[in-house]
Length: 283
Image 1 (cartoon, rainbow, N blue to C red):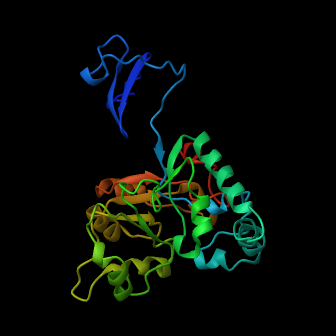
Image 2: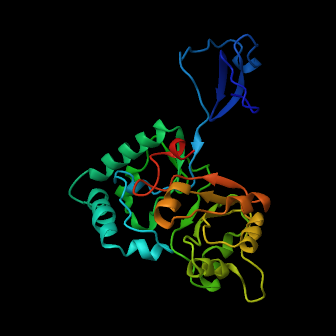
Image 3: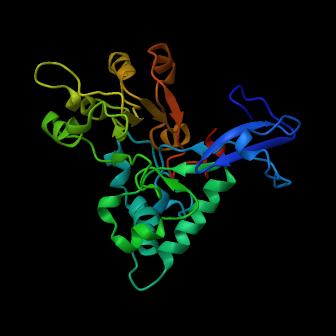
């Protein structure tokens, strides 16, 4: 497809280095640098790759968890005994066993599941908890936004736990606020109650200004009220994970208000225990 989503039945691509420099029907002439080259017939179909900006790949070999109740914040389900039994304990055994190559097997499996749904870029590595061998295991077919295989690509930072204060937010995000070459993915006010909603105010400085820049990406944002959602128009947007939200909380992000406020929205399938199998399934 081209920039207008036109499907080209018989297309020729010209690739120079790491960029597609030509995409047109096969009856059109090739650019001069390629005029003497003979195209390779792939006898296949090329689709744009999907970017998934909310996932937790290390958990995606875990089957769907039978959520026992709806919770008002993530602290509730994280404390559930069945969550520990069916999610955290199996995931730890599979991905952090130093005596086996299970982690590599998990990575190849979750990459395959992502690729089958058209995902070529994913998110969610907890780099601070991974040693060199574990990081190497995640270098494969699917790009990780936090750990790109190519050093010329920008590397994202992520934070799953909530900022407890403005001081924490300023220390972690302040030095890069607004720097588009350093995306910052933040699990933001995940839940439905006032407790979850209050974490948004950790981004507000003592003088009343919010620490929100064009490189901040808010994951979930389920608890935000219309005023808070409106403030995210200054950000890069939010990532919406509807199935996971509905299973865990019985409610999901107010995307209607987000649209009306001019906030950009992306989809993310979250993870295997409470989300869809891949981004195409979420779509």
